[in-house]
Length: 149
Image (cartoon, rainbow, N blue to C red):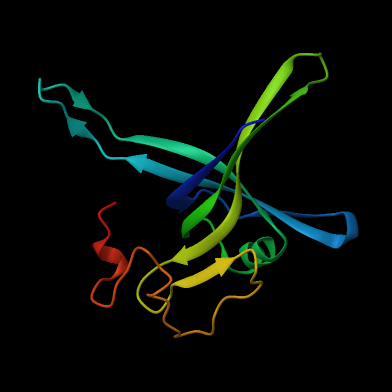
């Protein structure tokens, strides 16, 4: 098993899959798409846009927030750890799965819609609250539409 830190900014591919495990602990799974823009190399080769899909697992308070507020198409900021696990399937073949285990999540949107969420919080701030000091992608003069990606 490998553990590495990762930051993702992308769009959710489908509504969260929520389940409850022992002692009614919520776990949410979402898929997040990140894209690299198309570009042309110095020798003229055109490289097409490339989209990568990431499986993200949210526990406890983050899972509850995902259940209430995250929907297909939502733009999210995720901080977490990459974990790869392996198991033997029914035929005995070794299978692998790589997931991002989220430590923090922020719902991104237009000004006034940004709500920072972490594993310590189960509910977002009240509507209309500002979070620019905690959001690394906005400042007092910028909006989410000005992001370079």
